[in-house]
Length: 474
Length: 70
Image 1 (cartoon, rainbow over the protein chains, first blue to last red):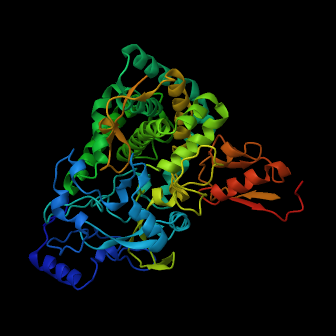
Image 2 (spheres, chains in turn orange, cyan):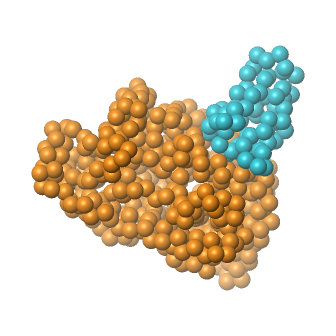
Image 3 (cartoon, chains in turn yellow, blue):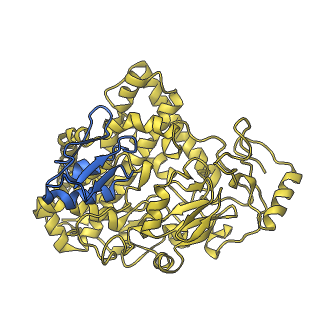
């Protein structure tokens, strides 16, 4: 047994930990002291060494054999509950989540390495956890929900520098404050003409090639990908490499070791880019950061910022465009309203965000002290998974939450999260969707599904839900 | 209605500026909220309440009992 950095655990240590856990104890690293300080203190490397031979106390769906498949086998495996969808077109969160929301709103959820997290499914509880500084984004390992291979448990020893989504204040604040002015409504609106141009170019190309087309490859993926590349200054010519890396980074079937390797590869890709920007800062956001704040950030930090924004900037919007189009195609009257009525577009985008909520959960939170949530005690050091799609189908948010209705008054959905980690790029994502959906529907008023229903490829085993393929004709 | 904003809490999500641009704006320098109208007219009260409720960082307060309403 060894950690990612190669530290080998003696059999005695393993046996001791395994025995303690068998008696119901959690590993020490799950239990920071009161006040949030990890028990190993500030000056010691964290003992995030992992314990094998953990007795399985998991639901059937999490048993290791099911996790051992290869990629593209998602259809044949049982999808873990937080990622499971329901319904003819798999738009809805799993029915089991609705039951939990009604009966067990804060429930133990078993983890691949043993132990458990608390799964939070109600809207009010979700907002409470996400808005409460007693929950840390920095303590849960990134591989927490990734399957392990055999007895090997692999975790990150050090968080990726610059990946401020897994930082807490004040370190989080240092990054977020510098990036916030880059994503104001005004800065985003200045991008509008260029986004419209990119959208039009891709629609032109689709029209020129003629039907049928895979809307994901022809439109939904390349538009946000190109936009975020231009915004950051990352060469779009490198897209084959980073698109495969970001896709893999979200792939829930990748075992822990491979998952960390992919994040390492993404970091290397971004480091090479940062080195070029240091020599010759370009016109993008990273060039700006080098010019204006270059002395405040290390290269790995700049790479971490860039990698996070690249990942977040196209994997999310791309899936909203693909899945959102499929949803609109199932509701022709609402599709027509979005196409014909400019006033309908903004509330429609909010309803698409609420109804689809494609990010099942953000960073897993860790309680830094005992906290009551929805009547359940969350102990210091325990993990919390806030289920965003379930929260957005809670009747306390809106009436008839399972009905898709673009005429709703926009409420405070949690599709972009809540609290200090609320999506930094939300204004960009909103703008891209507000431009892309009506432009697509106006260019192809006869847009329809092509081929058979089974050719719509749902991305069931991804940390961001969406479509791998959407064959359309017009 | 009396509106107050807390720029220390604000994370610059821009939801309020997008929803009620007559009352809220964003500072170009730091991206954080700028309050344009602390006593908004009655027809904006619903929208302001919505903006306060949906602010991700809880940086907006809309007090109903203010003498400044209307």
